[in-house]
Image (cartoon, rainbow, N blue to C red; front, side, top):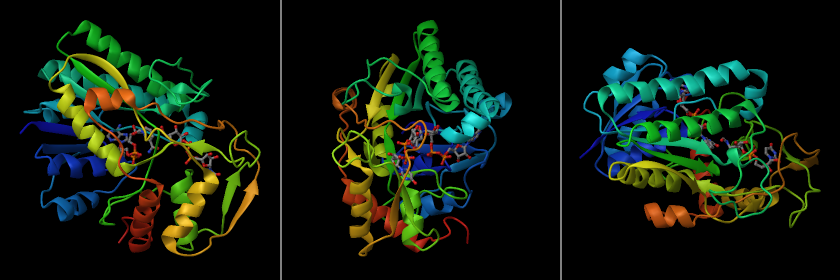
Length: 336
Ligand code: NAD
Ligand code: WQD
């Protein structure tokens, strides 16, 4: 079976993707500098799959280290990057350096080592505030933060590399809102400090580490006034990466593909689904809108189905039940 280098493979989406790659029979090498993850996740991947990925602790901006990591590798899934939108506004150079630097260095090393398939973590954030929903891959792109610009620019860098090298294949996967955890409850999302994102925040309220959820605005032009997003189970997303790797290894050129469920849930709908998952009412209050939030978006998913044969299978109740199982069993995440 082919061998895949997974950059950022110790992180949230990367660790779930390692599980699905190993289950599908791929050989896996993880490269991660552990700036937002813990090495202990690799033992947990082994607990789930019976196989432990090879691990290189290192930075993807280190050209020589990446070249060594690419020995014998057939394709790369590139998750490594910084992802906090608010932090990117405060520290734009850190984000441009890390996210662009790692992608450029990786592509240079791939060219040198003759590796011609890459799957890249892009984001629905590249659509900005879309004029209509569902959002299609050919909609105009617009960026509202340095983080979004890094994803937009990496997409253009990868497209340019495919024009220059006709053997190269690059899949630009635009994730909507990944949530949930592996159904075993053994791996999940473990953000540092107070979470920025909705699901980890609700989970910490449910486990008693935060007093209540503040819902950012209930006066949006949506069905209940709260923001609507396309939440996608991280295991569905991980399976999409396995299919994307299969595709990248057998095709040439660049393709941008949405990975979402194709339907939206409001903040209140997600909150009530989480209450069902943990079996009790949870405290919340309505606060002001969060700057930069858009009212509503969800994905058009036809392209993922046609090119990859991928459709999301899990619903919002699965996502909340799995998040709760992980949070309840690991109240302090990967810390022992
Ligand atoms: P994460 O922070 O859990 O994982 C990223 C991993 O990359 C971490 O383990 C971190 O230590 C590592 N890393 C960062 N910079 C590195 C570098 N220079 N060299 C080596 N390792 C490095 O984040 P995630 O949620 O798993 O996201 C994975 C990717 O998907 C990111 O590129 C993110 O921007 C993108 N994405 C995430 C979301 C989301 O909501 N989680 C949505 C859309 C896109
Ligand atoms: C979801 C909804 C909030 C927290 C972010 C990034 C995006 C992508 C995915 C990387 C919104 C509301 C949230 C809270 C709330 N990441 N909310 N109270 O903003 O859609 O997307 O993650 O690429 O780029 O921007 O996700 O989970 O922060 O918010 O009411 O405490 O929940 O207003 O409607 P978002 P989120």
